[in-house]
Length: 242
Image (cartoon, rainbow, N blue to C red; front, side, top):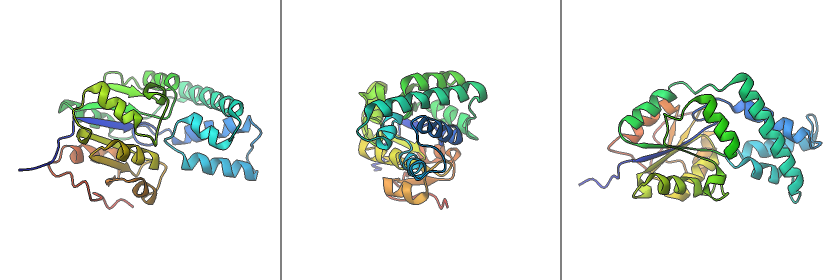
């Protein structure tokens, strides 16, 4: 008798996983730190952007707290600029879903699986993203760090919040997919059976494995076949992704 627990809830990351806005996010970070005196061409700027890259997936305010340690006012000011910059670009340019993602969402929901988007964006920014995408009928829940008590990735809180809100009976019924190390850490800490790293985003294969990825996928288009499989192979990396 199989001891495989069927997946009933999928938690999906936004930037780099379901939408291709990585460049937009990085520009907004660069503009935000520039308003605080850290400008391109300086060592401080290079160090700050390395920190941004390493911290992808984490709450944006936490990223700025790492750049401006001990100066909450400066971190908050930079975060406000980030949100304004990103949302301005969002209104002008819109967002492009990654290839195949709408088919993935429809296929998973068609089998009765619940879908939750989890993100490091603030609740206000997340609401605007959903409005631009028009995905309200594609997902069951969208979660920002504020919705889960303030702790975002790499903490497990947002995934566990989705479990409680959407009525999953067991954390082993959860699959998580994302493109950053913090996504992987979040999924593993929450006890998800599948923690899939997708190679369309910011972090390398090595970073995803370091975070605890159970599977590596070339794109989100490969995700339904993994989630709906009778043999999840949770102890193996299920892709030769480069």
